[in-house]
Amino acid sequence: MNSEIIFQFVNTLVLPFWLLLLVYPQWKHRNTVIYSMVALLASIYAFYIFMGPSMDLESFNSLEGVMALFQQPEAVLVGWIHYLAFDLLVGNWIVNQTKEIGIKLIWAVPSILLSFMFGPVGYLLFTILRISKRGRVN
Image 1 (tube, helix red, strand yellow):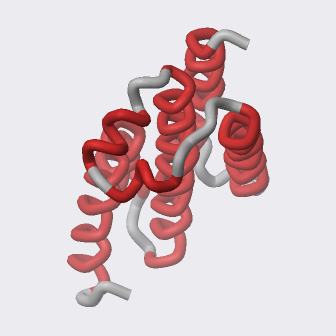
Image 2 (cartoon, helix red, strand yellow):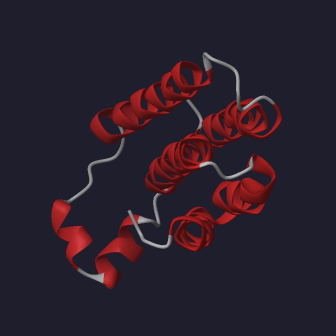
């Protein structure tokens, strides 16, 4: 299947799950639904890893090798799916943590939105929020 079509499909597919995190975070089946979505993304990812273009593991040993690898549209697609899956996991983790440590969700919304757009930055912001609430990292 065309990489552009799959790209559009996975990008559109994750949006309702991000909305679920923001609009209905207390839903009792949220974790199951989110983890199922991540499993679907992981399945698509695995398909492209094993059935897509061959990727020389040596390519990951240098910036030049990674840049050469990402000249292939399928490799960029695989990288993008990787981001989508892990960013969604981080967003869900943030929602779970708000409940666990007693932070009102409204305070975590910027972290969730940043996780959606810039994964690690959302995690970093929430980590700072957690430290300010709990006084420690763990």
